[in-house]
Image: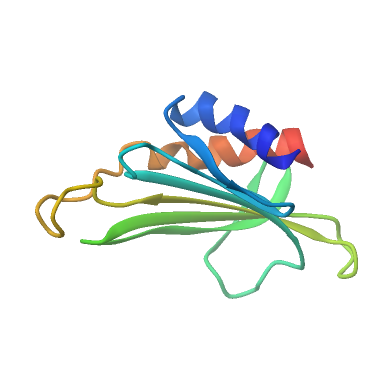
Length: 132
């Protein structure tokens, strides 16, 4: 169910070329044919870590966002939102957008294209509204 809801949001915000390649009960992974972008969406029990990233609120949900880390191997940005206030029932929605060199390119041959990284917060809000 989460993958179906997330898939609609991924296609809306990042484009139809991202396809689900792995689906599990707790989440799913979407990738482009050239492997440049990978989106991981996962729900798991837990509470927000206190020392990871910057506190944020997306779609009325508290969470944190880790800024884009970059290297010649890629760049990624992580957003985690919490649903519930009780440590026993809280669920975390983790959404990671990973950029890497296109399939077939040589490492370090060109910089990693991170076009679309600014859309992660809107994607997270959309998935949270659909799934939480």
